[in-house]
Image 1 (cartoon, rainbow, N blue to C red):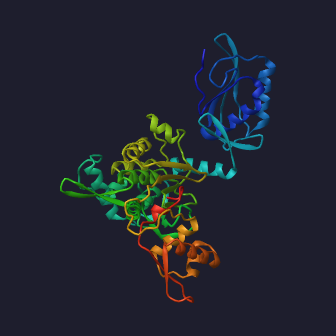
Image 2: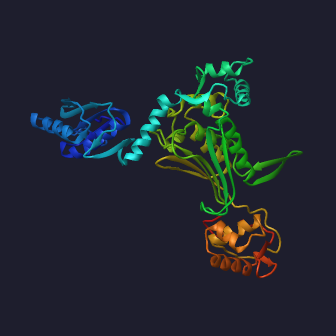
Image 3: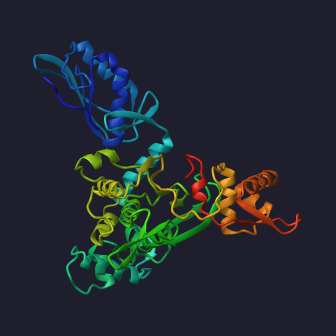
Length: 457
């Protein structure tokens, strides 16, 4: 007989010889879900192997839980017989999180127990609190601190999408309908979505290389989610490559990354973010990739790959925010984001990846090199290092940069910049004009992407 698979609330141990590992699993499950079950006498694959059960063995389990798990819990421990084999079943629960095992803290991820620092655990519980209480709590913004234009654009889009009944809505009616106002104050969800108090910060930058060091452009936006979604999309579309195709008699401009992909990634980033954290939303555009970062660790028990392969329910961190973004069709369906992004990227031959960190989630879209804009008289077989790439990119934007300005922009010494400039000139990529005392550089016109060594473009 097979008992099935382990889960985030169900753990198997072959024998009580794994008592220490069992205590870690119990603490991890308690910290994630507050309730769980553990069996001694079942292998990790679900096969029932059996376990010698006596008063002594049950007492050993009870004593180990009492001594190892803090704060203390009162589990139900009893013998069970399945398929003619004896097992020890431990049912446990607790609401005094966080729980430690042997003085260390753990969190359950799928069927594994991961040790975490107190800071990580604090971030996890803050995220949990945000789902249940944060959105409905009152902000410091009064009810009249609202961006009425954003509200109007929302209900017009929601009506057009067929997700809100057709009617002429007023701002007070909509705020009350969706629980975005309480008395004389906006809720925190209301302020984040529609406030005119600049409640959310977005940093956006274009970098010279794939390192987050030398930037060619940087913007700081402070606004509500509705306006930031438009600003973020516009910034990305402005700073990526486009190609033209003639369809029939019409010239069609096509971006290197499908607009639908950009919108889906941005909307999900804002929908599932933690807004009482310590990091900001961030867009970084590099020659080889675009990264879109949202604050708040990945919240679901299912990996992005599992969402792509299956039909799992979405782990909704901000229910009100997600609902509003669904109604105006910023997000299509709950739980379908990764599946849609994967499908759209495959159709456009765009590769992607993601990084799930302690305090945030980053989605990465890889860019293709711009191979169609090569002009005549381009040096052949030219390679450049990262510093040369950064300096060249800066000079394309500002040909009159001095060595000192280039050094400041790239965080390099003036001597290093001089060597880099000499190297670029020797390779025929730039030419110098002006005197020796005030160095001025002018870039030769050609496509730089065609010279990038493998791993940079």
